[in-house]
Length: 312
Figure 1: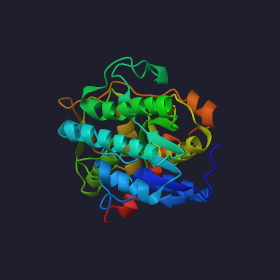
Figure 2 (figure 1 turned 135 degrees about the horizontal axis):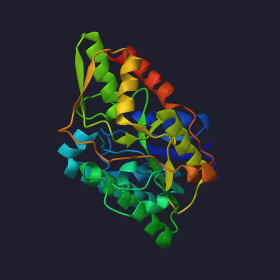
Figure 3 (figure 1 turned 90 degrees about the horizontal axis):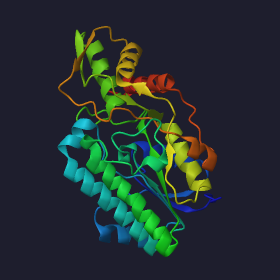
Figure 4 (figure 1 turned 135 degrees about the vertical axis):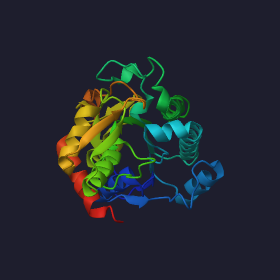
């Protein structure tokens, strides 16, 4: 059991979407938080990370910082997404080792899994093939950090754990249509269409692909539970254990928003990975995590947040 009260906990990405929820959880455990800002520390620069670690000397590091986006953003920025995510992780892990951090929590991604993985995805299938092409650079960059942590554990005895969350969503998400993931993009599209009385909304793909989504508060709770209770070598899935097709998701969001026009599927655009759903048995057994927020409840909370904040 890792005691968090009074510990200096450095959270990269702590001012971001997921990070803000994780920091709230850590504050409730009386942790002493260190939250580096992008404008002050470029995590892709090793010397900047080294200076930060030597100056702050954290007991625990939770590495959440990442450059992410939906299918369109991944297709437009494959090089940047590979470099930034690999470089940030490599620098944070190495410099944490140098200052003898007690524990590091690395948050990976479901995009690391092979394109064709039997559902539900089990952690032992992580290396059974190549990731889905549109987000492979991002997924492989993140997966390389699992190898690094396992190597550091073997050589240096470094206590680094690796979590594999599914797609996250919730209040405070990124609603920029150019870089957002599917749920905030759909909420924004349908809200705009409703408010402008548009007759239809265009949606990428065929709707046949499936996904699993985890409400951000549940994800934050899982990360903090793992920080406290898990010290193992093996990666651990973090999800809700509920698969939904994109077509059902789209129709559900349209109904929640109150859009009554037509939905036009653009079959020229990619669906991405055919199916996604995690086996979450390991998270329950190793650190007692189970999701508590249903997809429909989470969608309603997220849509309500957007309605209140869209003007800002």
